[in-house]
Structures are given as structure tokens and as C-alpha cells.
Image (tube, rainbow, N blue to C red; front, side):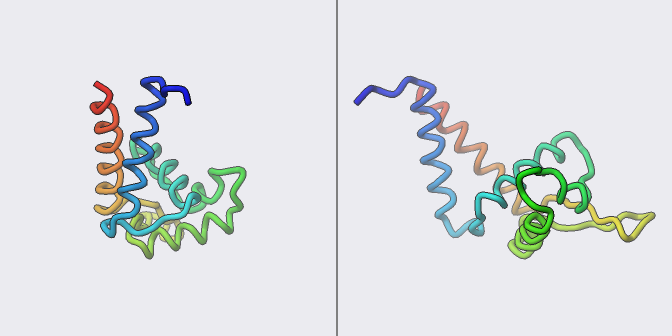
Length: 120
């Protein structure tokens, strides 16, 4: 078997660390669609963009709006997102991160950092 190149082994360490975090009882179990949505939301939050439920339902062309809506409900029940109501139009709801979401991304960031330092 070939010896993994440095970047390959770093990525494999990262995947291994992520899997270990996912198995801890610290965070609720999320499926791949929920994880993908959270990552897409995080990009918006990083840019300080407000993200409405309607926008979220249409962000991923390969996932139906109905499926996204179900996953939003699931993520909310797991405490990984919350909804805030627009001050002017109460029909508009924004998806916002929770403290648990911040902790989740901090843990994933630590995995990435640990994987990078292990190769040094």
C-alpha cells in the first residue's frame, strides 16, 4: 500500500477526528443533509447575511424545498438553529445559529487544527 501524502494524511486525520466528535453525546446526531445545510448556513452567517427560511429552502438545487423544510424543523428541535421573526414583517423568519451551533463549529475547527498540527 502506498504511503499517504502529507495532505492526504492530514485530511484523513481530520475525517477521523470529526467522526470521533460525531460519536460523542455532546452534540445531537445529524444526517448528511442537515450537516450540509448547516455548512451552507455558516457561510451566510460568516458574511453577516441574514438567511430567511424561504431562501434556505431554495439554496440547494439538488434537495427539494420540502426536504429542506423538514431538516430545518429537525435542526431546530436538536437545538442547532433557531428562528427569529423580522421586526417589520412577522411572516419572515430568519435562521440563526445557537450556542450549540457555535460549539459544534468550534469543535470541527479544533479537529482541523489538530489534524494540521499532527502532521507538523
